Length: 318
Image 1 (tube, helix red, strand yellow):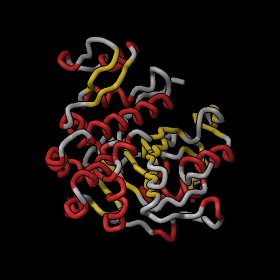
Image 2 (cartoon, one colour):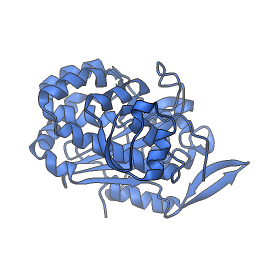
Image 3 (cartoon, helix red, strand yellow):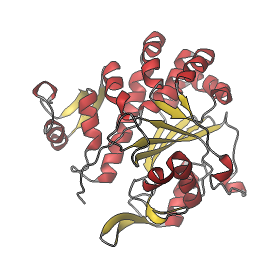
């Protein structure tokens, strides 16, 4: 289905800031760097967490770390709270099986937003920012999210340019879409495996016309993975040079003091983690369907199957 192309706020820089910079730069240094981020607490008594069974029991932070990334679709780059959360990616770092799970939640997913009723999940951010967005994820899918990172748009393009671009394999249709709004010097000459600069990568991540909105979410995760792998090959000094420009664009409630053990485990076997990345969408199109309500499109889905997927990719239970 083709829908109007909105402003997409891509948030994959967060992974670099929280995981890879910490791995390569060391705990004590990154602790001081994290002071550059904006810290905003949440009311953890009002996040809709009701986890009381063995299947979804919480685990130690050094074993499994979970947080959600938000990116706003606001056109005001000075106000990341002016719009909806156009991108929602839940990150699960599992030190037990040494994996990283990236879980995209489609922005049109039809859920019950507490206090507002059934609507698109990205509306929760406009109504109540991170607090209500996390509560909506928890109450609908039975999760125990408490931590988040939000990024504004201003640092995205420069970040990709600073790392020398990201390598992706594109079809001719995808190249044509990127070229449709590029200046002559930014046009791509041919399809295949190429290195995209910041502007090209941003345009690629917005593309819902070659495929659909779900294909676009897949592209976002592809760019995230490519960026993670690119930064992992950089020297510690190169990472240090990037860190200030990246971290100032982030807002979070994560306490870096909690993650010393996690950083040590990651740094000991980073190549294994990067070779064991799972990129999924929940709810999946396998059990999703178009749902029109009063002339508005929503992404409907089978709730029980979505919870089963979260039990696998979020809680690590088969």
